[in-house]
Image 1 (tube, rainbow, N blue to C red):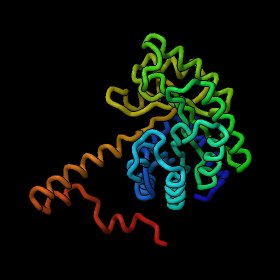
Image 2: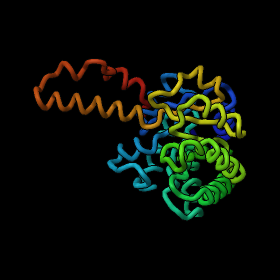
Image 3: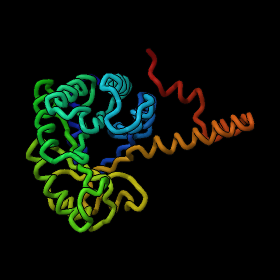
Image 4: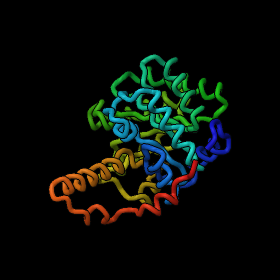
Length: 271
């Protein structure tokens, strides 16, 4: 996928109005290429999984240079739109966040996730404004997905969560957001209220207790992200295999459920 690709940007916007967009989040070029080959209509990154793949903790710890390297590598092997989770923008200064957004777009992305965390909503609004200006400079029709951690971090009492999300959604939309990501919400009535109570496409995070895809779509959800779950599952499998190998030296478990060398070779571009 070439940088500043207008077709990819337009497609990514359109995918949010065509039913429920399923995003199996990747963390490197190989995982991105694999999920695309399985039919993903777009690929998004997991900030946690990208950080872990580089040996950093999640939570704005990853150096921006490492992030940009990963984005370039993923964009090189993808033919579908790429959206990048930039956490809180890796800076408090909105101008610096805008510079990072410009670099991410120039590296080949057409979308971002950017979160409020525990910071005041005003700060994310300023970051979104700078992200929009950066996209205009680069010439990309950016899809800015504003993530609010009202549920995930318990920012308000449970009875006030929907009201708080809706209030933040309006502010983030006015600042330039194209989508609303509410990780942690699982109750159907609350998802319906959030989806119908504001105009942005609603993105939720896969987790135990979440309704399945058809029910989510009926509730008004337009995007479902795997988040770090795929990476967590694979690290768990890797840990179990490595532990068993170190304990017994047995070879047979290493090839159970494995993709073959030949299949992986055929999947990856040459050069």
